[in-house]
Length: 126
Length: 275
Image (cartoon, rainbow over all chains, first blue to last red; front, side, top):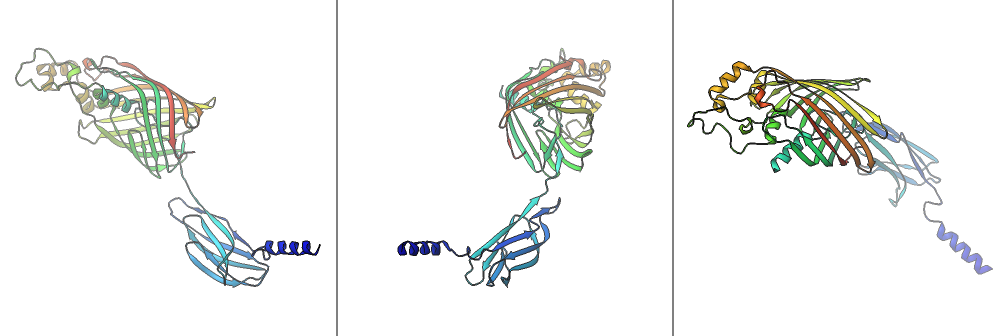
């Protein structure tokens, strides 16, 4: 019985992987940015919301662009960023000390495709 | 033989899919239709064109487009109408190339007095590139299109004026389309393609011109086409075109068949980045 309880505790310990104890969440508002006709990128103000259960230091990064800002993980942190993008952009939050990724979210970029009429020029039989 | 097949292909090239008349640019499409097709040649002494294979290509960018033998740039485009600048080869030149003579006539006239005019089947004419503006009105009833094209290759310095009405409807799970049109070809164009030169006919050239003076012609056509999808990228394609060639203004000797019927029936396979 004592052995069984020890094993059970050991199992619980192994299951307590980093991040599960302090579940962090990252969300973006809005989640979609549209490139207008005639432009090659979109520019938008994104509100980044991060929630964590502890007060460790975290850093917000944008993939391929670098570090935005580091902050303390209060119950909730909100950062407003002005972003320009021509492709889907990934936001990620990493633990300040270890650099380990704790949460991520993607800003989707949609490109406007103008609708055109099909042409009927030429002798064309078909 | 090979040349005739190539020219038949050029004349028969498709407009593109009958599935929907809207494109989401940028979009490209490459198709191959396998079946049987016939182009009746209106020219005297020239063979018709036959083919068993028909390629088609289209690309629509933001403003630039290519639809088989027509290249264009759109100045204005919205739901109701569009105005393009287009360039395409003239059909009369293509008919002459459909069955090209072995030896160009006129090469021996400086040595030999002509006893009679050269045969139409022996003369050669070049293909010309026509370019100009085109406007199309898109309505519920039909699309109405008007174009004015000028010879930019300096072959004949002539012009063409096109007017057409086209419409496409869904039918069963496919689509059916019809079109009627008229093409007015001016005197310069008609003189080059449908009259003898002095080199070719000697004194007969002037006699012919006196009896049948070169003038504007208005050719007309009616076309019908049907498309039915049968699987991923595959479709059944049927098409027919009745053409009327106006003799008044042309030297009648040049035209053996003033009324022609051309058609194609086959299975189409397409690839592209469209929906």
